[in-house]
Image 1 (cartoon, helix red, strand yellow):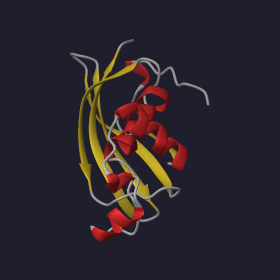
Image 2 (tube, one colour; image 1 turned 45 degrees about the vertical axis):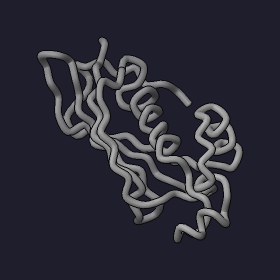
Image 3 (tube, helix red, strand yellow; image 1 turned 90 degrees about the vertical axis):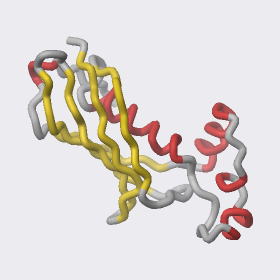
Image 4 (tube, helix red, strand yellow; image 1 turned 60 degrees about the vertical axis):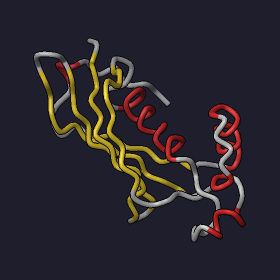
Length: 139
């Protein structure tokens, strides 16, 4: 995976990037270890089913970490720093489901070298999460 090196002057409104990912059981266990969030909703199928989920669900912030990859690797890449992110969760994500992460530049602020990226994470035709991300572009 190559990290993009787009500078502010090279970024255009409507620029689009995307990639696929899968949250595995190992990634979930690693996240639980790093975050300390041991809520059984994320690790116990029986508990999650009692709350009307199909099985244990992936942490929302683990899913959202993929927005960081979108910005830091693809759009704009190494010169981008997230300044603000507003995230909405629409549907649960379960372990080992393939997801598609996408983002499109919807605005450019030339005064402060900030781009606004509208992003979403989806499983097939089901939206898992959407986000509006303000990105400071440092070059």
